[in-house]
Amino acid sequence: VYIISKTFDNQRLRLALDRAETPMQRLERLKCDGRTPYRGTVTSVASFGVFVDIGFERSGFLPQRELPSEATLQAGDEVTVYVPNKHWRSGRFNVSLQPLQKPHLPKRLLQVDGLTPYQGIVRSLAQGVAVIDFGFDVCGTLQDVDDLEIGSELTVYAVRRLHRSRRVWLSRRPLVQPLLTLKEVVADG
Image (tube, rainbow, N blue to C red; front, side, top):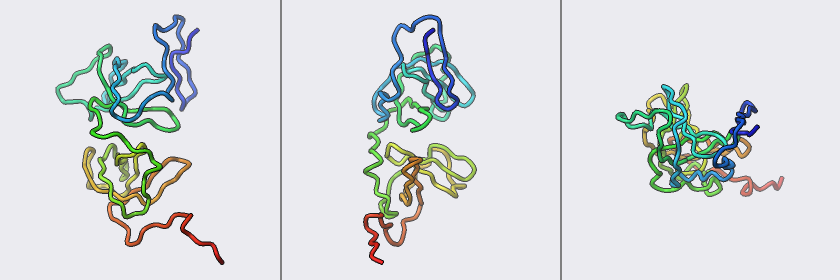
């Protein structure tokens, strides 16, 4: 048997008796810059979006909100997509029909001082929390967002970064004073 795909979150493998014409690429090789085009095939269509196989270990997800109203994609259709981000643990990734205007910056360049403004776009909303794409290879989390809609543009400030979960907390208002980094704190008793 041949392993066709694997799912990280539930540890399942999809198997086939025949070898694929072209081997699947490893997810580590996926360029998530939002500007590299990938040619793919629609594998399934759901009410909430479309799954697109672009030749990697798992398919990408194209949310319904990203589709133009006149677009009617069906399984087997070929599309060109761009990968703006990938979840660091599960390997899931979204795709878009439009390239990003500029590539995402690495998270290590993010200033988490509560004063540096970043332009962001609301990517998803759930129970008063928004996921914000603000130009880095990690999305930010913003709370108390009852007045926002998906696609809204706003200015945000990074106020906290959790390294283990790769999460960044955002605020709509700048802080009065900049946050100190651990290196700046003096432990002199």
